[in-house]
Image 1 (cartoon, rainbow, N blue to C red):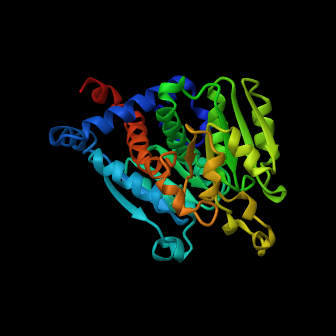
Image 2 (cartoon, helix red, strand yellow; image 1 turned 120 degrees about the horizontal axis):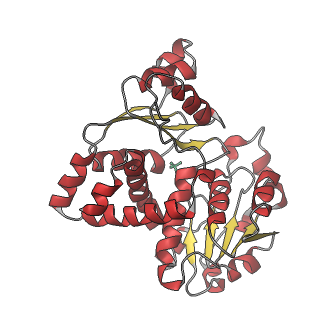
Length: 327
Ligand code: CP
């Protein structure tokens, strides 16, 4: 039996896949506008069931996947708290997920444990009923579907300006433990002459594995700085992120001064007129809510883009993309 289409890492995608995915997301967005189109979409995977296993907090990823399933007619069930599943009785997470796989056709999972999704995907590959697994966030490690929606948002914004190639993307915040930054950096290597500016306090600098990954892809360049204003004023896109203090060993985040890495209303004067402001959300003090009113703020649209990107990805997983394209 052939292996299912798992979504485990941004490294598995190439440019042609990304471009097809984004066209598909645009098409689903368009089809969904009419009642007739909405009905067509709701029938396309109505014979499938999914399980959302989210044992780490989530608003956007959970709801956008749940809604994407609903758009496509997939019946979704969920576990969000292992204290009310049989893990509470000592069942291993592997046995739990294998159990869920008996009832559904797709597992979408978020876990605080890096590598768990890969382990579950490998385990299911060896069973008589292997089903696809989507990594919806794996601890501080990866968030591949977030990077897909981030890239989709960039691609829509830069569509009339030569696309993503050649753009400067400034990533700000806790780059050491921010999985969205890690995954997006990897995905950007599919584009030519992109320049990433990593901007953070020294305690939250990007890790060596990402530096090495980028160095192995000479079509992309990167630099690191602590100078916030200088960095954001050069950027075509500013990607703000919050401090990931859920991964603190003690309270180390509390003693690091991040005030210099917060985008305030006044900073808008330094940004390029056509810059794009992104944030994977949730936000805290690093992104002033008054920035929301600026036309360059794209993060609310970015959230909604997540729903379309995830719907498109699920269509690819189940091989129904051509039906969508032909509609
Ligand atoms: N961006 C993101 O992953 O948000 P949630 O944690 O709310 O899902």
